[in-house]
Image (cartoon, rainbow, N blue to C red; front, top):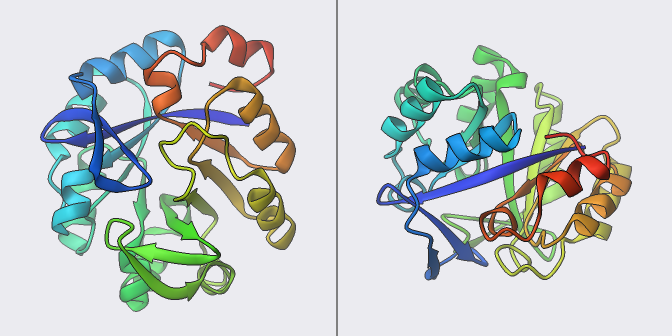
Length: 241
């Protein structure tokens, strides 16, 4: 299982939200490009880059940061936040994202996402599903869509989707441990799906548990930014960077 560091951006700075709440922001006063370089120097090969301004405004805002990270590092970047149009999608791809995370649009306008899967290929997309009590939440985690996670995955898997990042909102940014049983059940239901865990990681032990649950990768945000997890411990536990 691969560990993917996360950089969430607001106003060009690195932040973390607690439970997806924009009123519960931890500001790290870090430059996202410098932090990406730092992650690469630690040995990480992938990066999860989130445009929280874009997520809140419904239009991508941070492509300049994406472009600069791509220019200055060799990190494989997946990007999310505010991608609502083909214009923004192509801008993100041309700025260096290997994959894009699609969240709310896949729920509110599934025909557009289906078309993108067909046009660009399922391997370039990650369904970003923010989940609480089995339901997908949208619009920056503020609104229950009424859609059940398993039904949405089934639909898009039939159209070429290969990867899903699932965030348990109740765990995200809380350092309280990930929802391991949730991921284990999801992998049992969809054995061929690449599942990326997100939310709640606070220790290497959490990551080892996620690996045992069958996750392909796990995103670590606050725990890496605050030095709770070291690359040495990741390597000792046979976790890929």
